[in-house]
Length: 164
Length: 164
DNA sequence: AAATGAAATGTTATCACATAACGTTTTTGC
DNA sequence: GCAAAAACGTTATGTGATAACATTTCATTT
Image (cartoon, rainbow over all chains, first blue to last red; front, side):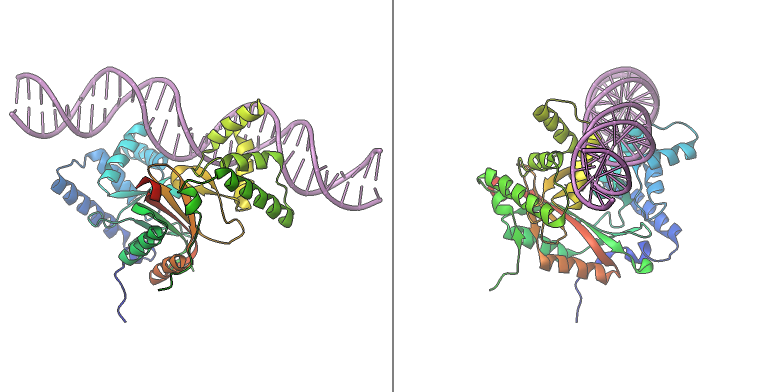
């Protein structure tokens, strides 16, 4: 039996792994992507992205702010952080997780997709999936209610493989 | 071809209808449900629920606060509103929509279900669905990532039937 | 009906998240 | 080099939510 396509970073997010590779890869991909798109991954934007990729747990704007201050040794103000976040969101390098008021790195910034997160209640790590068939099932369900979908956000809560 | 079960209030939320009936029914059901459960639907709790059922659009806590003040003619403070909301959430008479920081009445308070909302970008009305098969598809997708689901929140954005 | 404990509400203060508005600096294209 | 655009700094404020503690109301027992 052939299973349908499911792109996911759960093997990294929800398992032991060499996280430094995750971060390095994400940053390298971000740099390339910004070059291609002729947009500027400035030092402060890259610093925020790097901090977000410190882990697979979503991180709040004010937490980023504090870490930036610690790193740079001077006061940082909220708009600085939010502007970087705004840029990274626009480039789809990160996502905002509404239920957490927090941000997480996107592992597939070049693949257009809707939001689908697996949030572990125990360890806090969040994995992301691209599940075309599920997107279709969602669109089909909406269509039965006469609703045309432009976007969706699905947050699945539970326990990851390691925390079960 | 037989379609699978889909409980939804989209016919009310996303069509012209006699909304007074929606509200009356929701309040009557809430009263009965609280009687059954031996919990108290106090005047302030009922007032908040009634205000939430003023429409099918999600409403923020501070908007409720202002409307309560207008209604009761005296100052209301945030904890008053949040306590009522907390109670209504616990009884599953309302839901919180994370992406909106706002609350909406639940049309099926007695049916256990996960959150599945259809948010219209044009008119702002939100319909809710209970879609067992979709819940299963979500659980199955999560399972393929080794993830066990305890809850989920799905917010579908787009255009409702009337706004297309 | 008074006593009691639990539940609900009132009140003060503060925390957490996010953005508007405007000035300055840096970068980029000409 | 120059002008326009983009990015960044700074001040102030808007918006959503809760901690902590005092007081009142309610239900139950006696």
